[in-house]
Image (cartoon, rainbow, N blue to C red; front, top):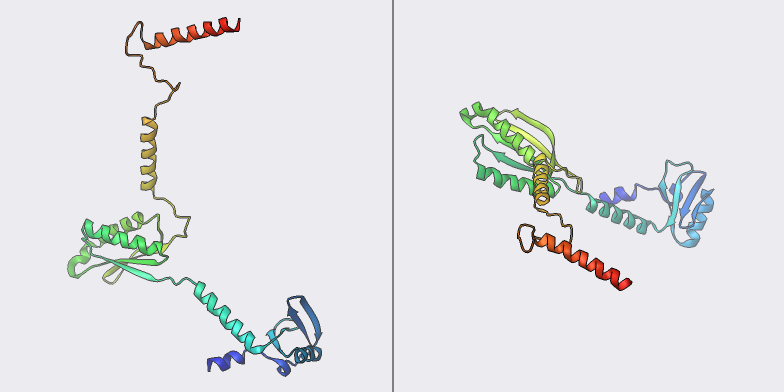
Length: 236
């Protein structure tokens, strides 16, 4: 049934009953009477296939109809293969989730978002634990903040029955925004590097705190003056 429907999607040969058509091919396009286009198709041993019936005049191609259907099917298959299937992954918390379990689920959420999937995180309140709904909201907000580099919030925490949901969508590759915590850590690291760096006036390090015949700094100055006089005497 699918094959028949596909074959009936296009009009071919004598099914095309307009006065003139536009023939497109590798060499451009030409408008001609439909009867002339049919004669050309018969001479070349191919079909006259109407590919754009709403154009004025309708656009047709001179091609083997079976080959045309195969090309259409192949093109649709390639387009379907290129489509990224986005899945929604669920992360479940309790209102009093411990730190170890939180970090474990945070790691999985990062992997889901990096793979291009959405994340639906929720806190499930069992029985009287609904009294801790504010605690659950804080947990989800922390979760969203820790994932700021990987995903963006689609909807803030909202209570639906006994579950409080938070929805996150993946950020596009290459445009992930660093969290404020990450930026603070980088700034601290740069400060440490800058503080440890020692400016060097020359390639030779001089210890001015060690006295020796007036100190090494004095000796260095005397050597520089002696070298200057020796250079002047040589030039003379």
